[in-house]
Amino acid sequence: MESSAKARGTGIARRSPEYIAEKMEQGKAVIALTNNGDWVGFCYIETWSHGEYVANSGLIVVPAYRKSGVAKAIKQKIFNLSREKYPDAKIFGLTTGLAVMKINSELGYEPVTYSELTQDPAFWEGCKSCVNYETLMSKDRQNCFCTAMLYDPKDHYKPEETKEFFEKNKSGFERLLRFKQWKLFKKKDNTGSGGGNGNSKIKSFLFHHFNF
Image 1 (spheres, rainbow, N blue to C red):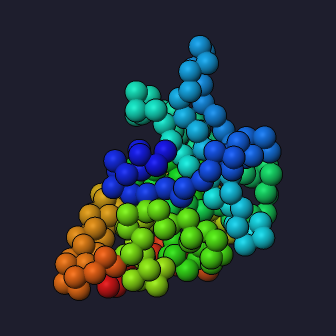
Image 2 (image 1 turned 120 degrees about the vertical axis):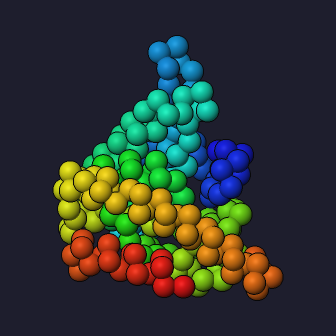
């Protein structure tokens, strides 16, 4: 998982084999296999802020099976499992990829500002293994290369609506991701260091990421 994340130029929270095994034993993981029993993909559930927030972490798919729908199927399964085990929890994720944003939008996630995510220090500690950690901390954990997305069971649009919104604004999101990379990298170079309702959420998201 870690080597795959590094190849994408991002990071993934390091977890010990014992930690991952415990997630499997607790029934908090989804494992994708072929009919022959070959390993294809994986994802697991983590809880933060005393169960108020849930993250579907460690999503990984074997290179040979990427762009085949496996990631989408795993995300759907782990999302359903999260809703079953933690029906009142907000489910969130951070991603640098447009493909994952698309999958999340089809599940009912909305783009949000970092302030709407868990503020549990233990979660943000996991970002230390990301190559962009210094950038995150230089922005006081309020912005980074990743896009934050959230599903709030008590205040959310229907998946059909969030999917439609994403499709209508896909090119804008793509430009936004490129803009964030350009702007944050530019600031790195200049400093010499590494370092309501759904509609209002979306507006605050766009304002936050363009207001550097």
